[in-house]
Length: 183
Image 1 (spheres, rainbow, N blue to C red):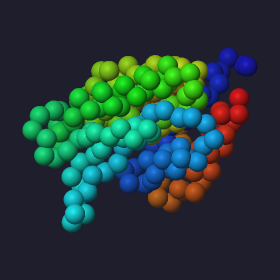
Image 2 (cartoon, one colour):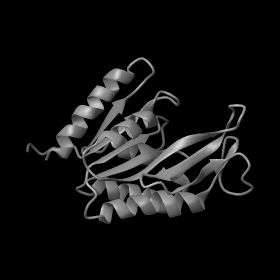
Image 3 (cartoon, rainbow, N blue to C red):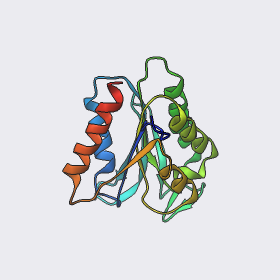
Image 4 (cartoon, one colour):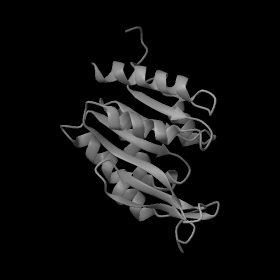
């Protein structure tokens, strides 16, 4: 090695709705290795309007990440963040994936403004990024000192996704992931 850290973390970034979470879920579901972590998804009403976001472990435990009808918690736009579910489902699952002997890949969807309200989540993400296990995740595109520090890590590759380059971003992510998992 020439003084540079080897890439062990892959983070996909891009504007909201461009397919980052869909890509991570598709790749995670098609891998021949055991993964631990969580995904996020929108909660929609019967009329189709977005009501909030859920958080679900790869093993199916689910909770509310944020919702417009919550009465307490930090506010992000019209939503309130459910710190309890974020920590007992999201952060706890990251911690378990780091420690799990059979886990070969840590999945974190996503590292963004809502999740950053939890100090436990921040610590878990940093531990996962520092662990020898590869991490696949998504990271919000907006500027933030914590997010910027993650993006500047020499062991992390950032793949930019947009509605116009979904296929290329998926191919690039898949290629990096295969290299990491074949080690």
